[in-house]
Length: 332
Ligand SMILES: [Zn+2]
Image (cartoon, rainbow, N blue to C red; front, side, top):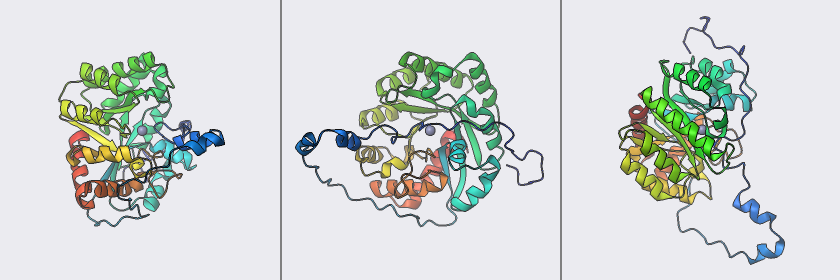
């Protein structure tokens, strides 16, 4: 928002609050493999082969990360609306929340509005200086993608603080909307985003093949693309995307710090630092050691710290390069 607090443009909470959303991208909502095993009869549990100790080094995820004061970072994907709702805070409490919880190295964030119900709320959030926006319809809400919603998204693309269209994509893990409807909403949004000349934010879960086919079909090769919250264990998926689209970047969240996320850390090893984006996907994907709490942009240094360890690159260099990458994709 503007630094002059007396201006009538100060966001207020007069517009209805968006509804509380169940994990848009959260891995925690479905029963984990461990929970599934625990639900199995005892006899079967005893027959489970002994867990192999990983040869990979243990991660060090401290509660705070040491960084120089002059380094700046951007959280390239966060749902501020969902964070405030979960914390029972009103929209005008954002600046205080930022001051109390984000380190001084926090510079900007991209508020991702992916549910039609949060459109107006996001319009108000971007009145805060550090908040930029992406608007789209999540595959979970694909059935709600109508001509009317599409028009509302197109209108918002010309706002000076709108940096992208998304997140949109395919989610065959939760399948909250039928596959055909998901594909249709995804395709329509890609066409519209390209017409509006906007970078795109992609959500893809257990839908690698269809995602890549549709992207190649509808998106020009040179397009700026953010594959958000990479959780696939299919490294070929990452490889072929990076190879085919020269301006495609892969976003990593706090889930790279989870004990059971070695396949995602393998993707961190594979993806060049020049093609990575830092994101929290807050309130979801809270990094260790805060798992179970609400993720927010103050957690970015923890994500960067894991990347630094996995790739054996100094933390400062991870932050600097990802800051450049963010400008390359979003122009901020
Ligand atoms: Zn998200």
